[in-house]
Length: 585
Image 1 (cartoon, one colour):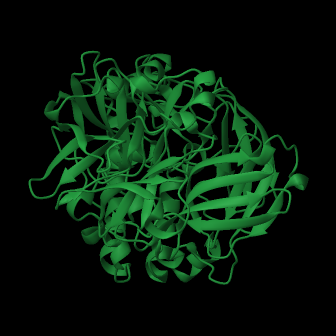
Image 2 (cartoon, helix red, strand yellow):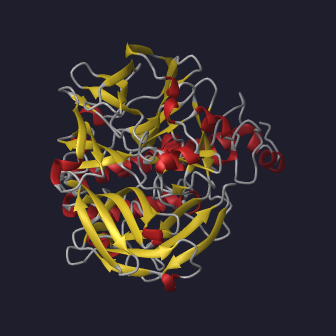
């Protein structure tokens, strides 16, 4: 029997199996950042026997590792708490859905406002590509983007696509959800030890490379940085995505923004300066410095870092505040203790004895000597919706959501966590702080008119948190005094069976003014626009894109578009105007 010379065999491996590495990409049509270096695709009708044997052995190895993972899930995991039980977490409209290519939609009520013409609304959220075999938390799902795009004539096209992260591609290759989660995977000592050992084996055998390629899910938010659109989550670097003219979504790849220093992850809530294009962001780590602040310039290049060593432990900092001159970091009771893994528990937990605090530092600081901390008992800041300065920079005002029952925030993330909307006022000169609750309802996922970012804001629109759903929207007027419902000037409770999501404010074409006009008519047209969001009707299992009048006392429906398939409950969203879409690379 004839055999191929070994030198010929080795030289033809890339052509026979399309094996790629970080420095070898024979197929010019394949984006190098989307490829797993161990991916093998058979592309020739004839194969040398040795290569076929290698491929069979690799298949057998994958099968064995997947079977061991299945064994851990079935026999070693402790009884699953509700918050990580897939049967509960993925119930109802939290269940995953399939991808959908660009599909035309019908407007079933009203008409689409002209300010939405040529724009696109995109929401990010968890959507596991495989039904989990073992413990699963809501935050663990693969990122899926759901986009409705409007043509110049306001014809609507809808599309749902996965963000093709390294985790997504690695699990798709082996056909099994094996990547561990800090929220769910550590479920008892036996399961934890076995799961860690199994994933170490996958790393050693080249099936998984989290250190170099990350393991995040890009399922939390979206942001435009350097005229590129990114899907983000704070456990990894952002993934750039591209929107096609046909209304499709393509994953371009993972980006470190040309960082000189090692950069493995960053916040899912970067703050973009609408005037300069500069972006403020941070990363946190399990070793000091536990948090590091940095900026990204308008060309998408990461600038110098400001390490903050006065943070004494790793804290889950989901969001922060940025004004014209200051950066404010929350130091919460939600902490990470890696040693808990040895006891078979999630490293993420609550330190009830810790007093939350806020750290304030000048935005242009070159070291942390100008940083100062202020204690704020009971304030576990989850989101910051806007922040600005008053009194010539002597006062910082923030509009935030506070996890009032932080000990339950991870367990009740899908149901009804107690979230309060607050106005926090900090005196830079006196180094004091005041807090005022704006509404007695449980609120989060708020939005403002984007033109008022880092400027004094009057109106805030927030989602109402209900049992297993976002049950409506409220409008708050910050000029009103007092506590409780006194700041609520408009509200809308969705129809029975409806579940909404994060609203986004889109200014009407009428509200476009010059800077001089804005100064003369401050607040006059701040709320002249529309709130857009997805809602799902459990009764008929249909989803809609909803447009509401932001000036209406009942936030009445202006238009509704029936979507061609179900949109699961998600996290954060963005609306891109035609000018923003045209500027994207």
